[in-house]
Length: 599
Image (cartoon, rainbow, N blue to C red; front, side, top):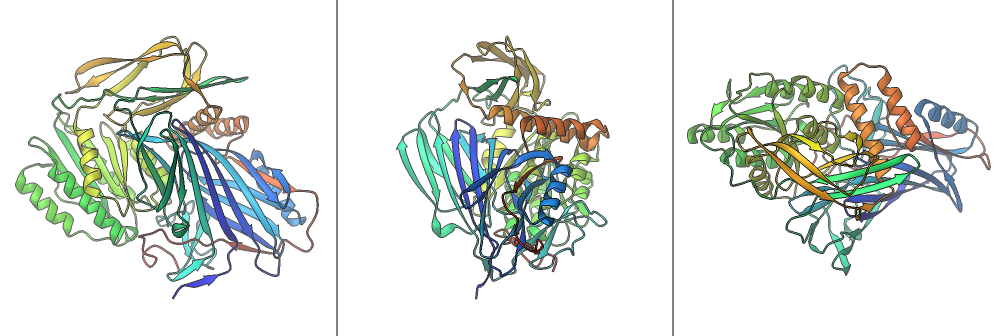
């Protein structure tokens, strides 16, 4: 029997507009006070890890109060004062690049308050398919012992028991809130759209033209307990490198989607050293670990003579199939598959142990080492993990699979970027075999490695990421930067291919017909903030937070050091600010409540 309770967040409305590979997204959260006393509502929610949040509006009846970006400490102090003085106020802070906290003070009994958030982000593109992702729920995180800067996962009403700075309250099994979600995405692809797929949800789709698509989430699939993943395939067999630019008083900005050669399968690949790392923690128990094991077994079967491999599991600790990388003989692969079959999901997520086990042994320079993590990424100590990857990476490349319905994409994407690799995602309703086959078909053929770029006459500066990932067929790299010169030029992409010794150069012709998008300046600023934040993981330079704050304030963006604050100063409410109530959320689809939530 489903139990319902009175909900502080009634509805979330998402409207996305996609032009080319840039998305502009408006998110409206509709809050309501169902009690007979004033409340302060607190809601911890996700957004895409590359979202450049640049607009925040609080709506009370017909009044629209535009939020202002401030230093985070200053914004928090303004909010505290407004709350204590009886003003209705909203505060938006960032806890992780993909986790945010919304606070609304002095909501009067029976009253409604809406909050509108706007952001830009770039879409992923793989093998002809663009992918738009809107995360709906923060997955429960595991935090190592004595760690307090994480994200606590607690039962509804159990506030403050996790010891973490940020807490998410989860509904118990059989409970249902009145909170639902509506999603509409309008796509202007610029070329004909061949196919549309959404394995995560039921959708309704309509075409105005072959290039223009509108997708709506079905009203029968409106429980916000998993990521909304929309994919659409464009008609062109070979998509040219795409350039989007913008000029304003601050100068020129660009975003370049850089495509590798269409086919390199005719070249013999180098021998590989494959390291499979499986998350066997409690949050993976059930369908997630089954999907991950299916992916590993499929990957093992795709190894060739001359390759080596290793299988590592981690939860509270780590263990492995063999003491050293094992030759990929049929007998060894058969034994490894039996080893994987017997692994179970239970315990904590001490991912640091998996990192150490995967990266802390000698690399065979004669082989291309690929480390493949299979995890939902439900940890609170992302900074510690990323620092460990940076410290230990060496010549390894990281190619990971995010498994589950609400994966920590921030962690997995950052690991792939640090590891000059790539990431794929396997939903609970996806075919793990099909995804793994396509993934390994791409990475098994020669990559364009050690990439460097001759920008021609563009006169570029501040290009991010400043460490360009390897290029793989069907998997472009998005580069964002500033420029002073001309867009009409020839860019030359240089790198090594095949046996990693053959150097090639690829011309990319660009011209003044390049499209323009005002959001590119915000996308660039977000990338700069991301790069500075990554540097701060392993560099104790005290100036880095100052630089992040300056960029965020100049471009009006959310960051760890800035926040949006909105105060309705037109009237005061009576009495004190009332009781603080959290907005509990459902446990992500496929995740077990009893193995992940602190009760």
